[in-house]
Image 1 (spheres, rainbow, N blue to C red):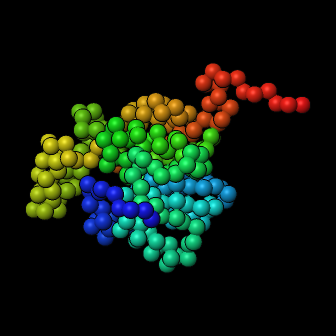
Image 2 (image 1 turned 90 degrees about the horizontal axis):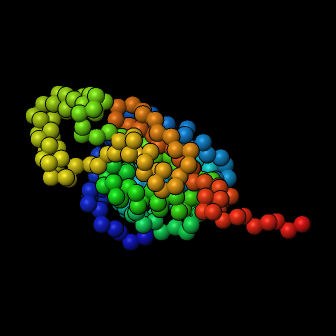
Image 3 (image 1 turned 180 degrees about the vertical axis):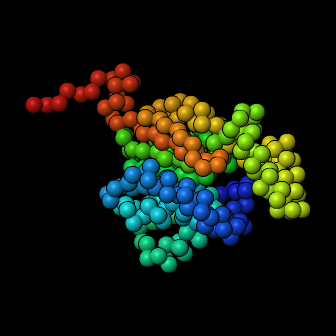
Amino acid sequence: MAAELDDPYDWDNRVEAWEEVAATDAFVTLRDAVCTAAAVSAEERVLDLGAGGGLVALALAPQVARVTAADISPAMLNRLEEHAADRGIGNVDTVVADMRVLPFDDHSFDVVVSNYAFHHLVDADKALALSEARRVLRPGGRLVVCDMMFSLSLQPRDRKLLAEKVIAIAKRGPSGLLRIFRNAGRVATGAWEHPATPEAWEEMLADRRFENVHVELLVSEAGLALARRPPLAAAVGAAGIEPATPRV
């Protein structure tokens, strides 16, 4: 792991809380959706962005050649390493990294995955992270992102999701009501999470010159975005450059 980075969400002190969330049936379902969509094979190299305690990285590791788990929190990655050791998994590297500026060479990975990390970035930073993901993917490499996909709007799906969340939190009693008020304040000040809509994901991926872009809705507010970095021949053609004529 590299030097510590600035962590505005203080993930180093939220490891236990996040472990409880990651162990829920809902998040196990999301993990399985990411792993299925990634469709990895034994020789592939995988990068997990915002890997946390390793929910996705450790599930994929037995199926691939190597997994690199990147996260802004050293404490999260320490917990991931503990889980890997407990399970006898030895093909996972951990790297403290900012998704917007990845410390990896171009074309380093066959697959890039991420699960519930992108909504902590504003849209401009999501775009930077997606550009970095594309850069480190090999030509033809695949991207799989699971994240919150909705907005604070009056659209029917958004209204339904927000109502369900408020009701569920309110049922916790005084602590739930306090959380609602705190979240309302965070929304008002722009300090809340920054989920993007499915349509925004499609646009961001297309703008980053991914192909085979597909976004589908999962349970609750979750969505899955799939895309591929174009193969080298397609990228050359799109740039208007004729591929070299092979020697005979």
